[in-house]
Length: 223
Image (tube, rainbow, N blue to C red):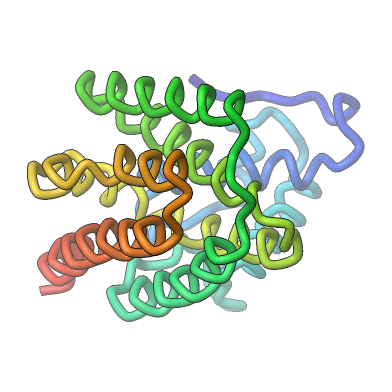
C-alpha cells in the first residue's frame, strides 16, 4: 500500500517522509543498492520534491542511505563489518542500562508477560514485521526501567541503525537454537527474581546467538 501525504498535514514533513522511507528500506522493499530517485518518491508519496530532498538528507546523515554527488542517493549496502561494530556499540550501551535498571512493578511485569505472549504468537505465525515491531517495544520497556535517559536515547539511535539488519535477525530468532534458549522468558525470570547477573548473562547469550547467525547470513550474501 502506498503512503500518500498532504503537505499541510504536518509541520515536520521531511521527517514523516524519512520515517516512511526508512520503513520501506527496513522491510526490504527498497533493497540495498537501490537508487532513490526524488521524482519516483515524490510520485509514491504524492508530494513535491522539496520535502523528499530534505528527507533523503536526513537518511543520509543516519547512514541508512548514501549520496553520490554525481549519481544521486542509494540505499546503503548491508555490511558484516558495519553490523559487527553497530552491535558492539549496542552491547556496551545496553549493558550500561541493564546494570542501572530499577526492578519492575507488578503492573509492569504483567505488561511484559503480555508482550512476550504476543511475541510468541507473531513468531509462530511467521509475521516478521509484527515481530520486529513488538520485539523493539519489549526491549524498550526493559530499557525504560533505567534512569539513564541520555544513554537510552543513544541506544535508540543505534537500534535505528540496526533496523535494516533486524529483518534477518527475525529469522534467526525463529531458529530452534534461539527459541530453545528461551531468551525473552529468561529475561522476565531475571526481572521477576531481581537477579541482575542472570539478566546480564541472558542478554549476552541472546545477543551472541543472533550476532553469530547474522554474520553467517551476511557472509553468504557477500560471497
